[in-house]
Amino acid sequence: MVGWSGDIKQSQKRAIEAKNGIEIGYAIPKEGAQMFFDNLSIPKDASHVDEAHAFIDYLLRPDIAAKNSNLVAYANGNLASQKFIDKAILDDTSVYPDATTTDRLYTVSARDQKSQRFVNRLWTKIKTGR
Image (cartoon, rainbow, N blue to C red; front, side, top):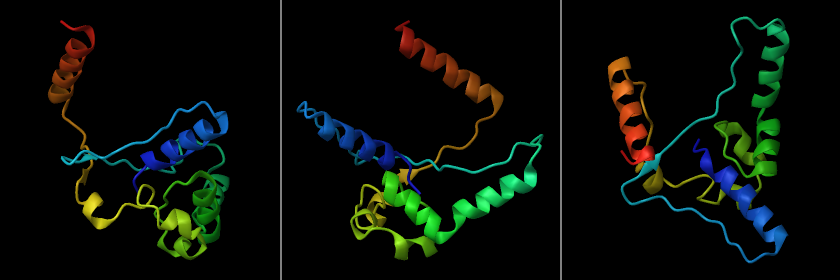
C-alpha cells in the first residue's frame, strides 16, 4: 500500500498535541506521485531464521496487521485485515487511496549502473547549484 500517509498522520497528531498552530498536510500533484511499499525480509546471514519467519507470520495475521494500521494510521496490504480496521482509517483516502488516486501513482524501477551514475551526478548538480 501507499506508505507516506502514516508518517503524515503521526506528524499531524504531534502538531495538534503541541498546540502551536502548525498544520501539517500533503497533496498528491495532478501529475502523480511515487508509491512505495514497506517490506519484511530476513537477511541472508540471519542466525534465527525460524524465529524471523514466525515473527513475520505473526505480523501478517489479519488481526495483528489491523492493530498496526489502527495504531499508526498506516495502510497494510492484508485484505483480510480490513474487517478489523477502524472505519475512520479504512475510509480515509489519505491512508487507503481511492482508484482515481492510485491510478496517478507510480513505482520507480532499478536503473542500470550507467543511468544511476547520471542521475546521481544530476542530483549533485541540483543540490550544489553547479
